[in-house]
Amino acid sequence: MPCPNFSTLKVNCSNCNLRDLCMPVEADIDELESIAGLISARRKLKRGELLYSHGEPFSNLYAVRTGFFKTVVTSSDGRDQVTGFHMAGEIVGLDGIVDDQHSCDAVALEDAEICVLPYARMADISRKVPALQTHVHKLMSREIVRDQNMMLLLGSMRAEERLAAFLLNLVQRLHVRGLSQSELVLRMTREEIGSYLGLKLETVSRMFSRFADEGIMEVRQRHVRIIDPEALERIVNQSGA
Image 1 (cartoon, rainbow, N blue to C red):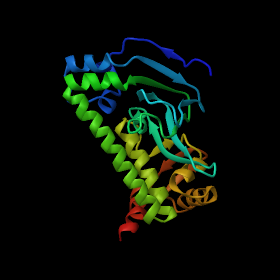
Image 2 (tube, one colour; image 1 turned 180 degrees about the vertical axis):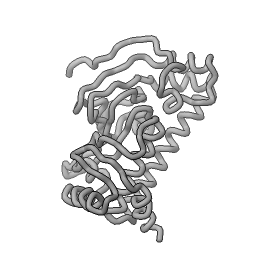
Image 3 (cartoon, rainbow, N blue to C red; image 1 turned 60 degrees about the horizontal axis):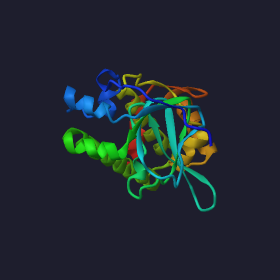
Image 4 (cartoon, helix red, strand yellow; image 1 turned 45 degrees about the vertical axis):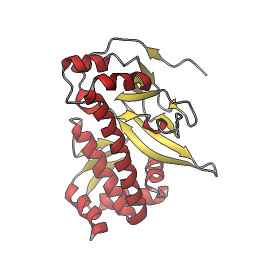
């Protein structure tokens, strides 16, 4: 296995445009300097490269600086199941905390860069910086909520509701990062979206075409422009009607 492309550096988190997303906003300048000190390296990955794999010993969390990742588990019959998509400002690797080993593969969907956060050092600093400990707990809680929402998607929603909810969630997360609420480039394939939502590829493609035909969005390959977000919200709300 080739050596990972790590680069040691001094990181000034206080000047990072993702600080409010992946670092505790309650931390003061001195605390931010302590937190920045736990970042041991940055790593660049090419599209399709593994950040970590299932069964690998857990030692780090990873803050996504640029790019998109997917997490994948392999079923007993050898099929891959996408369990999540992760973008800049989010933390990857929380799956490894429970059993001290990763329970899935994390794969770059495009060229990406991450900050490496050694978990043992993070635990040490958390005892001195309560804001960091609170933030890690919030991150873990967010993952639990996402898992619950995913179970709701797969258990009670029809195909069009699943895709509408997925797109609304995606644009909301992008908007938090200062990006457009109406235009996005899908970093994942239709097949990967289907795997995540529990839908067949042809069903996902049919739903995209239906939304385009109904004037809800424009679709040009991976470029999507949402014209009528309220229509997507109405589709999602059908499940609670």
